[in-house]
Length: 260
Image (cartoon, rainbow, N blue to C red; front, side, top):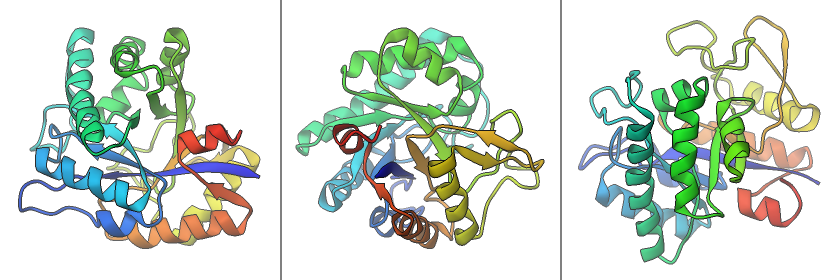
């Protein structure tokens, strides 16, 4: 049976301000990417979200971003490789400590926003992030855009890698994501999104914005948790995957069963 991990970016509230429907989205996903306080989230939200993930049997990943709360980590920054290494290690290390305090283990690290998009195309940035993941533990997985510099960096350092695709985002012909300010950046119809993901898992292809087909191998697919359609999107995608004979399992469970 084919398997896929279904992940979501969660823990993005801050203090008394709430973003997303974390608990409801967690009911449909197998892995969570928890904000680590720099682009979103805070220490208390991190603890709360890890506990929520544990209660629902959802694996935990760190979602480190740029130090940019005002811009939600979506504005490009110019950082040295040493800075990126430190940024990633600092944030993911904090979440790893919270996981251990709750009797869990950090499953993966997935950079957020502009850090993710820039490093996906920049080999020096990707290597810096991968180095931080490497020192967190030999079983910690680097998650990044399928076919990107993340994959090459993980191979170079000999660390586990999970190729990621996006349920609710459009793709450019080169495999990058359609910029958020351009038409076709988002897939709003849950049924359309679900059909795209079934085809991705079974056939290894996903349509690009120009109508061409991208060939892609994904271990995990992401449904964003910060939009109004997130809960229904996650529910429909999971149900459709399972109806088409595709098991939804977190990355470690899938690896143990031979699915990754």
